[in-house]
Image (cartoon, rainbow, N blue to C red; front, side, top):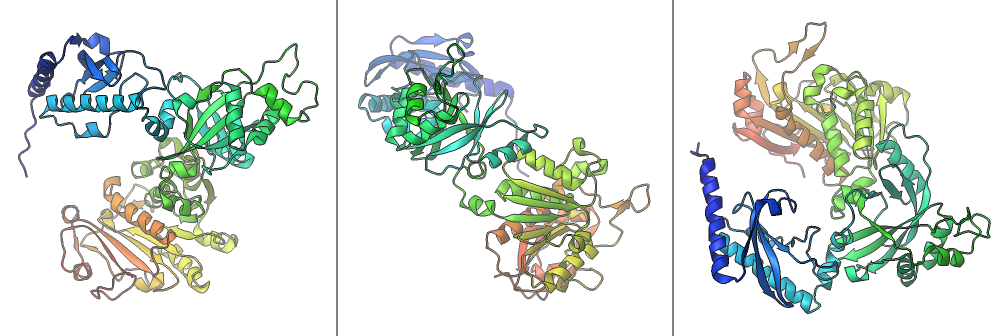
Length: 597
């Protein structure tokens, strides 16, 4: 093992002081009017800063003062460049709320061994940025990062808007819910009700209002941001959505929530704002005054609603499927959104595998399990003590609904064999079954149904060997061997990975309460191989019955008193180190090297 010597703290402090002095000496030698900035002066700017210097810098528009601010971790973290004089929102791009310039990713290459060279590089970047500003070449930078500038100067306590609106480039009416501490917008009333019901169980019926998404195309620069309701109206008219916005204003009961959809070089951006409803006068609604509710001519409602009153900018936090699962850039997530997966067995393998599938983007999950969560389960189960005593299927569904409110989850408490006999449509119109029961009888019955019905959908079986020293995932598809073909009639596998001379099960001081003593760390390999095979099947990357085997590290196997089986050593080509994955055709002859197609 390599001799790793931890650097003493005093040495790190000395390095920080030496780097700071080197930069300071360079500044005094090359700049005029250098002023030290104290720790007290910088603490209110950003956490972790310990000082710096204020210097004049010759930029394209003339000399201006900047601050070079040093973090405690300098020179291992780069300094920050801050504009001293207040600069309005429409001049400098890459400027954050505290007037610090965002100069990444170049600063990621800051060399701790050359702090002076790193500072010079940052100053040169600042000068180049000023040149773009002076030459009116900054618009592209503003447009590509429009949301950063949209949220400048928004107070931290302003109510956020959470959006499950699909990022389709079209203007449309939307639905709005306003709670005590947040707003949520959606394309449809039903989708909004489902999301709120999942995220806030017990909320009950909610009142929805009308809003609008106006797709304006090219992103705005800060100089083009709407200031008044009239500005918003004019943007809508230019986008061909004036009628839509007028109809929303007529139907809205209160303030009007508007999302401005924009296209940028970095993807879709939706900026949020609220157009305040004109205040009532002498109890009269100044939008629909003189008309019955909903009968005000749209042109008149728009004229009354969108005037000189300032609009209120809001940050929209996207929580829609496309953003949560890949930030609009994972093509697989869109495919998985339409998939339905049945997970049989919500134990220490099935439950985390189900969570992985949900996090990957599977749109609908059905959980089947007869058991409740016990205290002995929670050390290697994603459900914690708050779910003790609850049915695992229902508790796991509750957790996922809260964590990912946009997905659909249905729990069924019972055994799969009972449900196959009593719930005729359980496996109708689903895309995949994942079973991790570790119950030979249940899985044989599932395989019998699967075979007799012509294998209409794929089934993935997952299980661990003793002490989780090895794990298996088997996908049974229309082509290839059936599940039972890889076992003898009693359920012993044709390809065991490990073998043991002593019993591998322990028993609690209760009748029939036996268990395998292993922890969550050893289990990760099996969970990963099961979840990954399930995703590959859903995405069409597996075309024949396939077997993936995870072999844990040999050291762990030997510590627990086991050994590699002769069948495994033959199939693995003699590899005894462990810690690897092997893929093969399911039920292929041992040693045939018949890898999956």
